Length: 128
Image 1 (cartoon, rainbow, N blue to C red):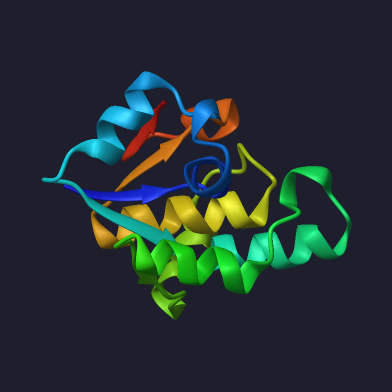
Image 2: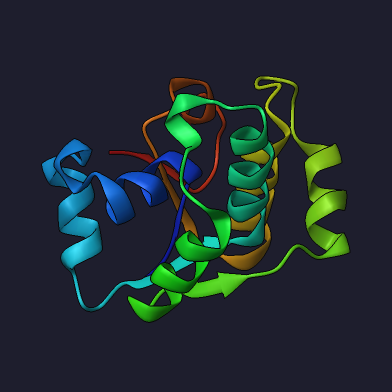
């Protein structure tokens, strides 16, 4: 199964694995799952780190290289993903999360998240 992780789960997996739930660990530890991160997440980290958010203190380049070294696949942002964002109902205002959901919809991924607002969307989203 193709698994797309939202930005907070990526940060937790890379820096604070103790914050991951047992359900998240089961998804991440299942070798049958193909783990993916989005360029949107690296962009989000860069933007929010620049705003000095305490939960986004990691260097984006180090996060990216660490994820690639750990076997994650990187997903770029394509115009079809942007078109899909326009089709989403306005349940969540965060543009990064909306892009992640659009990518999951377009690419046949399951989006893992702990974000209750994202879980309000129909589609391939799972709570962890």
